[in-house]
Image (cartoon, rainbow, N blue to C red):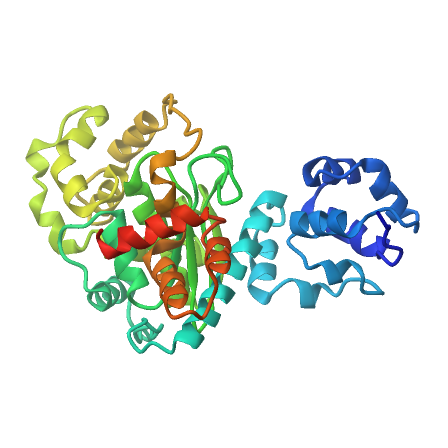
Length: 383
């Protein structure tokens, strides 16, 4: 096959540096012989068009990106939101950076489809006015804005946020391009956009922890109107915007009125029994025991010593069985799990209205097989 002569080696080098991979690693992961990439770097014809397309797919770029002359303009390649997250945590892994860009592309797809559908029923982001409110009042206002009931879990919180014009993605629990690795400290991130913000939540063994991450990120979007990426340390921070996002999430998930149902006289002497003591509330509110204990600490009903004892007990290593892949029987539901109800319904509506082809719908829905797309349609139709 004919080799392409005009591939820009400077752009290949930039992509490797941006992704944090060597040329050899790039070759192995993209499925291209290392010798061919070395030829490109030497300014020689080294790749066929199909190989160049593999390379472009690996880096999440278009084929033409590698054929353009001159150096890369990062301001054009990376969005302001991406640069905000990268500046917040310069140590971000290449995998997380790739995930951020992937999320941005999904949002662009959603906005394009929403515009084509011109459906007045699709939610639009119109945030509440929180100016001048303290954090408890802001949390009360947002709780009303979301229309939350007293009993919730992660899914009802997620649906409530999506109903207000945001997208909420959840990472896969097993290895794949939509996973935030188990060993990664990143728990979630948010991409601010006045038209359609996006929140990404890392899948965790307990969904109650995901609820806090979701509302923490919502706090950044509504209070600070900025993009943010957060790890374990941020969720316990007592400084700046992270402190505000934590307090906001705590008050939103566990309002002061909820604390009246907790009886201090029944609190166990040992921290190991706290989760059982709060089992009814944890289940009803869809939150972890720690979130409730922090609220009790805030209002002076729990000592710092008891809270620290609980943290020490909770942080003991626990063997968690790692997911190795989604069930094939439910593969058609995976896009709903990852991209949320709003995104999936929009893709299916666009398909039904013939704005996109079945092949496009498959691509937008994480490359579902055609039969799985049809099964997903039947699932939404209740068949």
